[in-house]
Image (cartoon, rainbow, N blue to C red; front, side, top):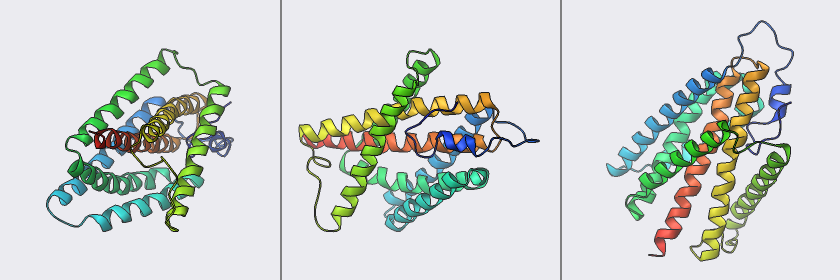
Length: 246
């Protein structure tokens, strides 16, 4: 049985909606890996365009905002309609790339070299957890899944509350500042984001073993990309807090 996952785009109900389908090609691990590389390539290409535009002196704020809003809308559609994944995931990757590229450029202006550091750390965490998962050093047990899911949901609620309160000029203490407690909070969030990768690996592996429909390869790639983007952004925030103390 597919277990819980902290990633809201990947959960057991997703496969429940696909059971009973016949006459379709089935999801494979290799196919999901290929789709993941494609989506990441699209994301990086779009990010590079936004990055280049920023350092060319152009106003990329409309692109960043448009990418963020468009990406959010598409992510909701994809989450509730996995059958749209083959068509919408590449578009989502492009929109998310525009947002990430503009965001990274702004951080780079403040802290030179921070985007390279964040990128390398994200790749390093991904590889380390993938190896740990493949070697079964980390197992996605039900208790593990429940714990990561609860922590992820808690973080999402805090971020949502922070966003709403910002309209009233109120900020949640320590969440965004560079105090040692604020850094500790960011480090905790980075750890939870990283652990979501383990759940994504498990979800994709289980889906491949159960023979989910072929379009679920795109859906699995989408969920993995969501986690990687979140992890990258949180690492950026953590590094910026650390470097602001120098």
